[in-house]
Image (cartoon, rainbow, N blue to C red; front, side, top):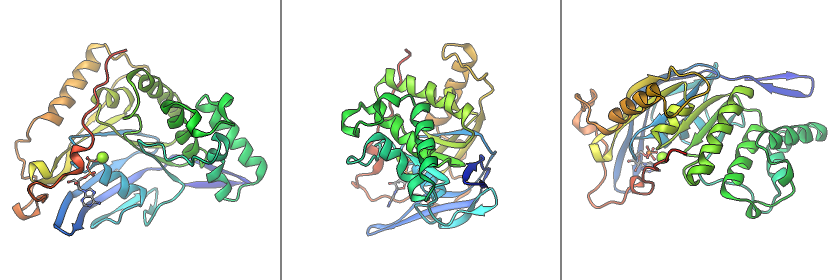
Length: 300
Ligand SMILES: Nc1ncnc2c1ncn2[C@@H]1O[C@H](COP(=O)(O)OP(=O)(O)O)[C@@H](O)[C@H]1O
Ligand SMILES: [Mg+2]
């Protein structure tokens, strides 16, 4: 929620309350039941990672919280406000950086605050603060094509942070980065999250990344291939310290148990849904699932 202090808008992290949320897509080939009704409560400032095989509805969930899609049933409340559409207070970072190629780093980051009609001095302050937060001070006047993939992703994070969102929604943001850059970005994001209080929902294919970053990992399952609409299988609390050692025994135990949840069949795969509520995809149809395969993150 935004609190107005003079000219300065300061956002505090918001709690998210999802109730009975489901999504069906209507296509020329019929209805795709992408997500069975789900409930999920996220505390203000929590870092939630969502994992699960392709097609289980992770991006659908994120797009619903972002307000890009309308729910078929159920509701999403961010603090007490119902999500009815997109808002700068719910910032979204995608795998492809989505920067404006004709604007410099500074201009890209300034874009949101300018849209919000903030005073010029405050726009500058926000740009300096968040370009600094992602370590790109020396590149503020460069254009996106002059930057590496990792740097462009840092710009897109700074651009979202410049709106001081109460919620940050990230859909496989590091999926296109090489392993070393990715590890650097994970560390930076984890530090940023400690400094800049915002609630995060972060989707990833990498279970290691989820255990490294999350307070809780939401394991989703289902999808067209399993003939069951996507749903939450389990929520795993990551009871690790802030500074995490990917080689520690407990880290590896958590990784293994989440991996089992992702890669094994549920005992009750009907998930309380009727056979006709299953996800439908016509034989031979190419699915979004095939587009992104899991990205293995080697230890560095
Ligand atoms: N716009 C859409 N129209 C029709 N079907 C869709 C659309 N978006 C997603 N789907 C289908 O919904 C299911 C869940 O997709 P998605 O949320 O993208 O999964 P994930 O992000 O977990 O890979 C998949 O079967 C996918 O093909
Ligand atoms: Mg997806």
